[in-house]
Amino acid sequence: MDKSLWDLAIEQTNLAKEDENVQSEESSIFLVGSKNSGKTSIILRFLDRDEPPKPTVALEYTFGRRAKGHNIAKDVGHIWELGGGTWLSKLMDIPINQNTLLHTTLMLVLDLSSPSELWFTMETLLNAAKARLEEAIQEAKTDDPYIKDKLRKKAWERVGEEHQDKTMMEPFLIPLVIVGSKYDVFQDFDSEKRKIICKTLRFLAHVHGATLQFFSIKQEQMVSRMRGIFSHFLFGTNASKSLQVEHNKPIFVPAGHDLLQQIGTPPISDGDIGKVQARTPMELWKVAFCSYFPQTSTNNPAKVDDPAKDTQFAEPAIDTLRTQKDEELERYRKLAERRAREAQQNALITG
Image (spheres, rainbow, N blue to C red):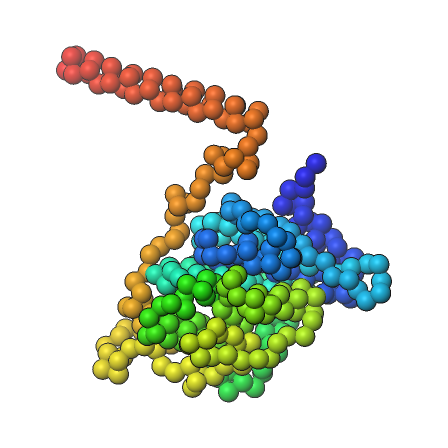
């Protein structure tokens, strides 16, 4: 019998409790992001699985293994993927919970080919993740009253506690990786558009203490670099320290390795900056980016395919019962409408 997502989450938690000394064995990466942004493809390439990606309907789990030296035992890395873009963010409470706070990395995948959805997707999912983190922290405080202090300390260690931009940064409480996917499409954009998107993503990643990586499934160098990121956060391998910030090349910036001075100012003319109603640098960048790329809401379940009609989830007995219930519901709806009309006519006659 297949295990439910809840069973898998409980099993992961129990494994973590069994051997807290070997953190790399129990690490997790949780992928969220734009719908059809390539999250599943990223996972498949890391796992070296040569198979076509299937749409992720809700929340899916898989894992990767790595040999531990000459031992028979292997490290296990847990991988969660949230499907549906932004509207299923309530499912975050399964991968992010009080027992996984100290060894979970959030990977936010943003579709570079759809800048009109980029800011909305980023903002919606990061806000949902922050809210879920706060809930999990409150739950964890029963056993560890200083859990938030520990997370904050680790966050500053990742970016550098004496970073010169410290006063402008608010590092995400768990490791955050922002991935700009579909670089192969993005690289054909107009130069000015690419520059604005690159600067904005560098700013977003930097102030959140995140690693930023552009990615294309079609370019092996970027696939290899992505494997390195997965291995680092799942198995504790050494992280790459290389840096690429030119907008004409695929961006790669490890957490804490950028500078606001090098990123530059938001793409707003000097004359317009004073007219913009923005209380924080984040709001100023949002106004600037969204003026170039007006945002389209992706928080719409109607855009997500109905899994009940997906052949890969076919269950004949259940599907037959579902059809019967749908027919019964339709008959009831027609009967209710007819009775309502009759009642209305009777009311007119008696009136």
